[in-house]
Length: 498
Ligand code: NAD
Picture 1 (tube, rainbow, N blue to C red):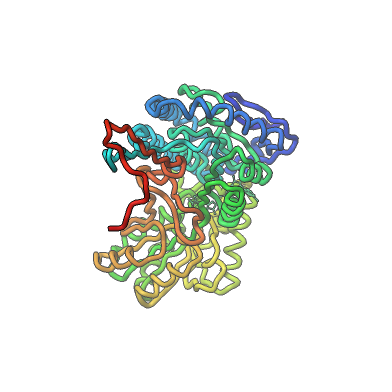
Picture 2 (cartoon, rainbow, N blue to C red):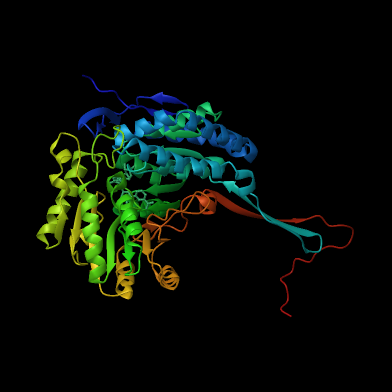
């Protein structure tokens, strides 16, 4: 059977592209190859850049109200096609359909936020800063911008960027993950259907060649990236060296601290969703539970073990599944490799997801795994695994737990579970991590706040969406105006210190 080729979306139409290079996309639940993804060459990259650059002058000059109306229609169309989009996501990524619908919902909340762009782009005005002189500031779009996204949220992460970038008047080249690129193409088609002109949103498939071109071409004014830390760092350094504005979000190792007074039922329930939901392929997944005191750890591990063994792992489209497969065989093997390393380095493997019946079939499945007595020197503690593996680390005090979170190379999200308001407040104030949950396991900021980690989890000065998104995708201009009335003119000599 010949496999379909996933098209680029350039200048308002599907294009097979010029390149002969392709990457395979899979159906992770069966393990079968599903499509060829073209990997853009210089010719395809030029087509995307030329189309976006040509569309910018008119799109950037449209009134914010006009652009907002298109955003409203886009949201409605995405909702009308939610079933189709969720299936596209689930079939290429492997997450269960309910999770795919959930990510679409979160992504569309950013579009809803962007519908308020006439208000969000308003500048400031000062009347009479001197005699006959007023001052105002305004925000203008940057021009052509690049959005480079990871495999784990093929709709939500693009929408984090597309909402503010498009509503503020930029033209975007979206370079989605080559592992699950179809959702990006459909989102762009629906944007066109909502009334956007061709070229305002282009989707270019590719690998390092396309990414490096977008980071260096003088027509690209800004690069928004989400992915793993080594690539985030490479993108940040390359694009910044070429004079671009860059925001580059990277990997994570999110801790959930369990104090002895925590509500254990709520903690276990929260950990099950946060560690194993979407098979752990979330940058805000909890991958480390830090239990304060051996009694806390013993009780936690006993309850978790039963729940992890009972996880329903199977076809992403079957009703009632907790977890689908991992995205590719290579990624499944990498996660399984970490489980082997954990055992070899002396951690106690309480539940082994490699033994799950689903893991024996042709799909890219692993069951949930649970490690106890993980120590900070171990590889499975230091590195991001990005799979359904939870590590329990035992510490004696809350201060030790805080120190673990603070010294880890990543600082994306963190949570504390406790009944003590004082302990929670102190922890939230002191911890060196960008997003903090108090009895909330995955503290993802909603669309009208901004998303971003600290330390090795993010490079650049602006977070995603919320007001930081508006600031990232606009440049600030300040205008000073003089309309003298009669002889009452202002003086423009340097002020004298009085
Ligand atoms: P990845 O870094 O492999 O890929 C991300 C993007 O970079 C893709 O579009 C890919 O094509 C491109 N890319 C890959 N290799 C490249 C190279 N050598 N040069 C240039 N570009 C390259 O990430 P992934 O595996 O798709 O996604 C998972 C990672 O993303 C995890 O580390 C996860 O924590 C992270 N993530 C972070 C956030 C966040 O907001 N911090 C959100 C989601 C995912």
